[in-house]
Length: 334
Image 1 (cartoon, rainbow, N blue to C red):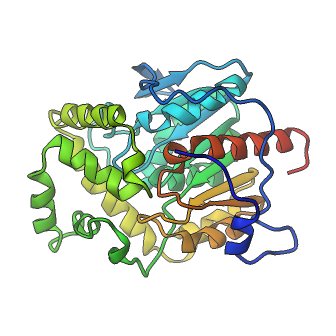
Image 2 (tube, rainbow, N blue to C red):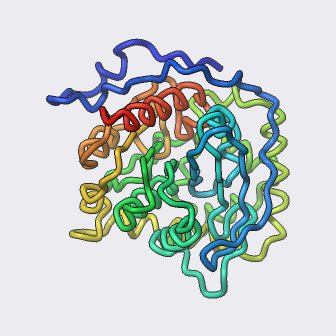
């Protein structure tokens, strides 16, 4: 797996503006050597702001705090590599959202994006401004939090955030049935098919969907993902969390007016970085430029030959871009 960024390639993908949204300064600071055999960071249930979540912490040497927010069907283990690379510059905090990973939801939790956002805000309230990094559904949640609670967010990084698209193209998916699995009525057959899969097969489906090059996903990481999927089969709330969170994303995509994420994005005050992969089969890269332009102070990095989870597939490139933003924000030149 390589993490080189061809010069000017992202510039060629998208039109420029007076301050090009695709001009992303990459940090020249030394990063730790990426260890492909690094296991997930240790996790435990922590309580903060009246909220209890399962959290994986990456001890850092810096004074900053970085909160990593996973996507739909993901967990805190999605941030193992990126958190390690950025550890010299900030303590990493990766929570499992309610109903995902090993965070048990409170009774009557509705799994809406708003409820996830409120839970996360309460959890980080006592930390002061944090660097917030979100992927997919976690990107949409991070955007909502940055707009609603600007005092909590120092910088915002969105990796393939789940921005609305009323023209989704299921043909781009490695398995189109996965796009229908959580729709009411018509998704029943697809749900039965997914339920019949074993943990290993389901884990492989996720990698096939989210990686541009699934063959590059390390075998030991697939073992870890299979183990997590197996453990979640015994959790009575896991299925509901996935179903209801998915439906909430669909509802958000069809929201109009002030409730639309496109209307909320311009309210974000934090310096922002948007990262997208050209080969994203989940959230199309065609939303990348519009997302970056909707944010008042954002730049866009488009990574070639990259899928939906750039932080896992191209962690060094993402780390250099994130750290480059932090450096320029600290120097007041972002």
